[in-house]
Length: 348
Image (cartoon, rainbow, N blue to C red; front, side, top):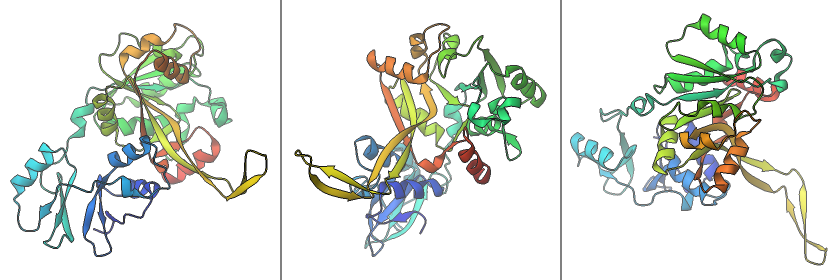
């Protein structure tokens, strides 16, 4: 129980880290006497971040103070199953008559496990694998970036495993630089999923080659860079995209930066107003993982160098809905530069 119970004074940032470490998708907010105050899910945290709450603020405005609860020894398994499914809950806390938390139930421990594979079974995945990977030289002087090894597997296999674990089996790799080597690798590998190659005749940026996929998909699909590994709930991400009717959803990592100095704030006369000692700033960083609706591919010009940022800007100008799905910074590994690559070797 200790790994899922938290106090109301912890920060949003701390809560995200705890949720990433626990196997459950929900935390129980309790007071000093272990009495239930409410529940907190990653969805609650995302809503707080997207409405402007700072990562350093406590969770008092984020958690659900009126959760569904069960009273100890006063419920049946069938009643619990009905509540979990009817209200689409991941967890229900169990309390005694004094509101002290004594247990909790989930779909798994009540004998009714979720099946996220069914949601992603036919969802295509596009991996942008055509870049030169100059930040990873000298490895990429010899190998295409997706084949740079981490532990005993290349980067691209780590990426694909994130999706195959949830049922995805249809992969489209955009290739250019050392594309023949990448093709030969998969011919030798003979995976039990389908891999199709989309060939750029010239470098087209981080989104230009997506134009070649117009007409290929009839449902939203994933797009990922080939030098990132995101440990997130992909089924929830896909559901988030669909429920909100987004045309593009980008996954953003929370980042907190501390200025290691006292910053000077001036007043209107140019005099010192006050000094902020080691101020903290919150940012949402684009990770390079997206969900796209097939319609937005038609916004991409044919055979032109075009970045994903251009596509997002163009979509915004045309009134398309662009969503942001925040994740904890520890869930994002950028292996496209040496400092992060070394961390990835240690973490995976």
